[in-house]
Structures are given as structure tokens and as C-alpha cells.
Length: 349
Ligand SMILES: Cc1cc2nc3c(=O)[nH]c(=O)nc-3n(C[C@H](O)[C@H](O)[C@H](O)COP(=O)(O)OP(=O)(O)OC[C@H]3O[C@@H](n4cnc5c(N)ncnc54)[C@H](O)[C@@H]3O)c2cc1C
Ligand code: FES
Image 1 (cartoon, rainbow, N blue to C red):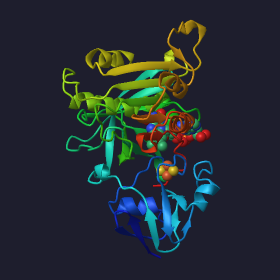
Image 2: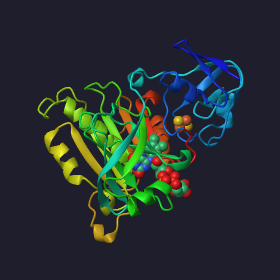
Image 3: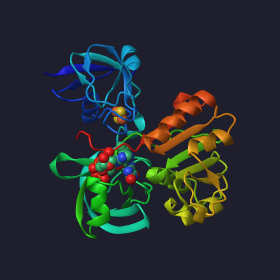
Image 4: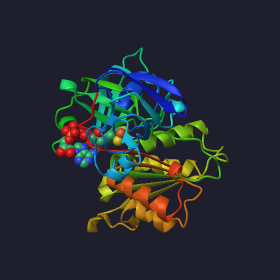
């Protein structure tokens, strides 16, 4: 049975087909709603049901609470319409015209850059390009309809080879395969670009804080390389806001591509880098910052009133950062953007 959905405030109208979530229907009809994990974990797709009934689907109860539901909220990646609906949700025009493609790709290079991180370089067929916004991700398509999400770590201008930073999750269907069996020249299939994590409008007087935990560095690398590319060689940095990257990992050995980050610091006077170790080992001889990255940011900033924050990586870090920055440091709620690296096991096609 089909249902008609009216989206406020845009007044866009779409039809859903049986068994489809609100997000699936919107994406199929080319309407760009905000989303991240697509499995009810990150909360980025949360919107309001103004009229009508939905089946809330299968979701994480911390992400959509009973109170949220009483206030009319639903996760659009899980909610299936049970009647015609009027919903409220902000559409994202920047990703509207970007085509989501399914493409084959050849594994070009595998570099084990840290003990549990592999940089996977993927080459598309000669006549194909993947248009994307810095910060977006792709899905690797596996057998039996399974898919796994990975952020693109290269910037859009540097799209000869797509770069992924893959962490080895113990028991992980795809990541263990990458670390133990994947071969150069192997062909995989991917779908993308996906997601709504990308740099919004910036202003020289609105400093940006990038917060990465572990391989959450990947999309932030893409965004920074895009920004640096747009600003030219680095001499013309007057229009850039101050940008600080806080990168949290467990031990010194978990930090990688430090030469590249060092180069960014040398070339771009508005960029600074704060590595943070949560479990520094005695042999690390670490003199830098220790603890949880969002707490280090709280120590460094008395207010985040006129800031933008881009956080990416573990759900715990992203949630704590959002909570503490908006309540303790007055970060505007619409100044916080995130991509949460949740397990992809329940992702729906
Ligand atoms: C939008 C998005 C972008 C992502 N980008 C990246 C990226 O750039 N780099 C990257 O390394 N990861 C990224 N992830 C996370 C990655 O997609 C998942 O970790 C994925 O499930 C790994 O697939 P797998 O087949 O190896 O493990 P699965 O077979 O899916 O899981 C195996 C076991 O490991 C656990 N597990 C898997 N992933 C996680 C996790 N993230 N945290 C805690 N436990 C986990 C599962 O619960 C399960 O028990 C991203 C996730 C999302 C939603
Ligand atoms: S909870 Fe819906 S996209 Fe993450």
C-alpha cells in the first residue's frame, strides 16, 4: 500500500511503497534528508511526525527515547508510514544533485599504517568518477545483501583513487577479511556517496573544531584536504576560520599519517593539531594531552558559543561531545555535525 508524505517546511510531497522507511522513500525520490548510520543508532535522521501514524521500526532506545516519541519524534531511517503523513525535517540542498552510484572498484593498494588500521586504496573503472562531498561515506556491498559503511578519506579533487581507513574490528565480517585475505587487484562493489556529514558554510570569525576518534580521522582528513585545496597553496588563509583538530586514540602507535598533519600545520597558519592519548603506555613517553578528547576540548574552551564542531568516530565520544558542548559550553545545537561509526550489521539496503 502506498502512502503520501508531505515534508514541512519544504512542502515536498513523496509516495512511499510498502515496506519502505521514510528515508528510503525520500532518497529514492531524490529528496535529501539528513542521515548517517541508517540503522537507528546515530539519531541524525530524527524528525517530527506532525500528522499520521508510523511503525517506529527497530532502533536503539537510547537514540529515540519514549519522551522523544511522546513529542512526536521518529527516526526516519527506521520509521515506516502506516498512513499518509505530514512530517517536519530539514532537507539538505548541498547533496541534492549528487548521484548515488553502484560501481565496481579494484583494490589498488593495502597499507597497514597502524597495528589495527589499513589504508585501502580503490580504483574506479577508467571512465567512471564518484562525485562526492568531502566527509561523505560509501557502502561496500558484500554477499547476501550485506553492506558495510566506510568514510572516504581522500578529498573530492583528488579522486583518482578512493581512500578508506579501515579499522580491524575483532570478528568483523569485512574488516577481518581486509586484514587477512584481501588481495591487490581484487574487485569489490560499492555504493555511494552517502550521508550528510560535510562542511557547512564557514565564516572567518567562527572557529571550527574537528573531533576524531580512531579512524574517525578519515572523513576529517577529506574535509581538511578539501578546505586547504580550496584556499590554494596556504598563503591565502585570511578567509579561513581557525581550525583545530583534536584526534583521540588509545596509544601513540594508534596515531598515523602524522607527517601529513605536520605538513598541514606548517603550510596553514590557521590550522592546529592536538593529539590526545586515552591509554598512553609508559614506553610512549607521551608529553602531550591525555584523557578523553571531548574533555580536553572542555579544558581548552570556556565557551563554544560562536563555533562549529565536526565530530566523527565512536558513538560514545560523539554523544558525550554533543551533550557537554551544548549544555556546558553553549555550543548552538545547529553548530554540531557528526558521523557516528556504529556497527553496520543491521544496515538496510
Ligand atoms: C557512516 C559510517 C561511516 C563509517 N566509516 C568508517 C571508517 O571510515 N572506518 C572504520 O574503520 N569504520 C567505519 N565505520 C564503522 C564500520 O562500518 C563498522 O564498524 C562495520 O560494522 C565494520 O564491519 P565488519 O564487517 O568488519 O564488522 P561487523 O561484521 O559489522 O561486526 C562484527 C562485530 O564487531 C562489532 N563492531 C563492528 N563495528 C564496530 C564498531 N564501529 N564499534 C564497536 N563494535 C563494532 C560488532 O558489534 C560485531 O560484534 C563507519 C560506520 C558508519 C555508520
Ligand atoms: S539513526 Fe537514522 S540515520 Fe542514524
